[in-house]
Image 1 (tube, rainbow, N blue to C red):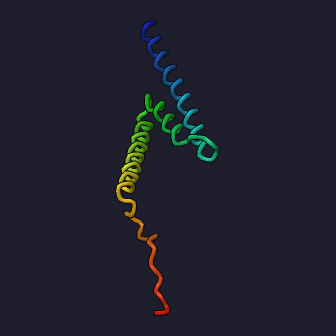
Image 2: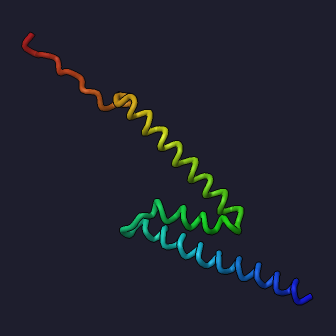
Image 3: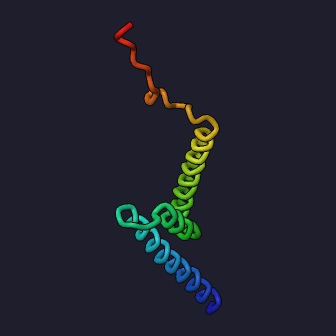
Length: 99
């Protein structure tokens, strides 16, 4: 009986500690969106800590990973073909009025 109570207390304590640390890191990251700091690094770190205990945090962390992978792929494609998608920025030669 004592062993089971101790085990439940440990699990609950672990969950509380992970929640407090994860939420703190996540809130610091959210504050860094408007304050100077690496919010792009701190927010996923907070979600990673929270994902140790919560499925919703793992879901949002996976969504952030997918978004980051999509962005990296877009930049790789742009690097391979720098003129891709620049139709709005194309330089159109001016017609010569003298001719």
